[in-house]
Image (tube, rainbow, N blue to C red):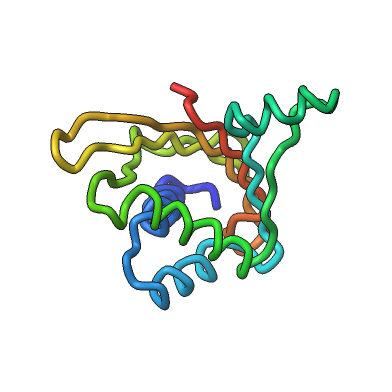
Length: 144
């Protein structure tokens, strides 16, 4: 997965899954983009989770989902929270970039559909399997 056209296509498909309104199409897109045992790790979880862990004297826990069914549930919930109400859409914030062979970065933005203004975003570091599907995704929300 080393040429720019393939990287761009994968990045476009990755971002599209978060905006896909139709459950069957969303699930199909996830199966296209992700390896069957693909894992997404939310590296820096929300403050409430960090505070709860600290109150119990635990280090900040990464949040993880693994496999197509769990990824479908994760992407669907994000869609329901942010896109379905019609207030936001996810977009690539810049061109994807290759960090190493089979490892790419995608900067993304959550944009207000009303104003076009960026209201959030992050960085995802994707490690690909030999078929060019996402094996691991380390998501950093709020990373500019």
